[in-house]
Length: 450
Length: 112
Image 1 (cartoon, one colour):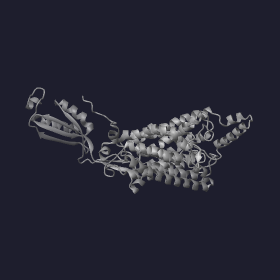
Image 2 (image 1 turned 90 degrees about the vertical axis):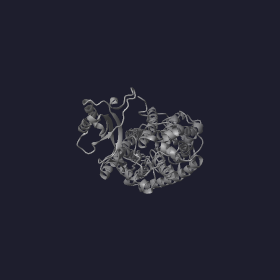
Image 3 (image 1 turned 90 degrees about the horizontal axis):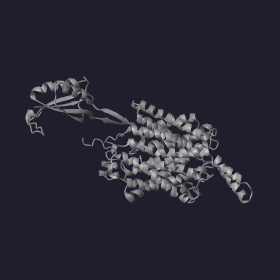
Image 4 (image 1 turned 60 degrees about the vertical axis):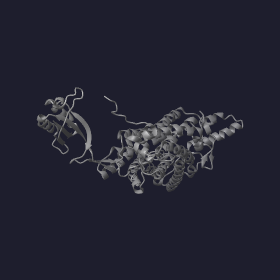
């Protein structure tokens, strides 16, 4: 989302306030007000499609990406967690989450309860955020981001958290971490937005927040049984590849949709997103080939996702050529990023920290380096375009996000543990989440008598 | 009577079965197994984590034959299963005390 002081939407908002004032004074300027907040059918069509694309990223995208990476006794458990995010976060969002994130600000920290139960969120645009699409579309689009973010964290505690604990933690996390973060960065009056930090599509709100919370989760829940001495290879890499490809496809909605309109900025974000994913795939596979002697398919899938994460904050602020640098380096940095867990001795099962936190931090910093007003006048110039201040602002936003989300997730995990217990007991973990949590098996082969 | 047990490469199963049929062998039991011998396993690489896979998939066949046909059966399996490369497998011959055909109650070589 590019909601910045001086952006076209912001100007539209001021125009509409002025127009309303004049209207109250009895002047015949109703047409001006309509002009300011007139639904554009092209924008609306694109945002409806983008909204659906972002939902697809959670399931089947992420569900397959993660599902293929776990062992066969846990694939349903992991898929169920992504699917459940689509269900429960949607309700949370409609009832109060959207209001906490996008309601009238309380000191830049949290949104008010104005939009509770979607009060006032209707078919007319809300010019403060998107003047040319129905407020309902903006709300639904944002809701899809709220869904995928906690789903990303599930990769860190995969194969060992009970379903009940996942459910409690996810609802708490969405309410106390995601909603405030979204408000700080994207809400009108949010303090990070006021600071001037650039985050086009959710580098801090989605990737750093989930990535650093994943670290807290992996640390608190502990390693999987047998970790370090039993092999735990992915059980179905074709799932993972299909999942990664769907994430890549859905990311066009995520990044290009964040222009909130079908315009040139959306086209820029579309191209930079695609280019960064391509470059990062080359970067990851290349460094892996050099270092380990083989180019792996999982390396290609991981590299693509790393590149998509890295370009997310800058997609609407950098040029396609800058996106090559951001992607290529993003692939290499995340390749080393996933080594971090060995150094700290944490079992981040599916590398959420190495890809989303490390890639997200790189993306935020890269935005401070490569951003250009020539791409987006509502943005700022980065280091390479003569604006060193932006880089500092980006770093400040990153540090604040890391600190708040790590500490917040830690507290919420403790609370969840006290309420329902985080971890499946040993027998259940050994049997697998599919059987122990859901009484189902993914693969029932050769059991038919013949 | 003897039991001939052979551990062979999975892709050689069809060839071995055909050859055995052509010399008139009457029955065969096949199991998919894993194991290791002189042929070592392989290394797998997932996001930089290396796993050494020690056990390789093989097929085990069991066939019970009369004393006089043992040599022929062993020779047939040996020929059909050979690729000349490491990991072709092994053949074991064991004595069998009794055989019962469950349907008719026949005993001994009658039941083969």
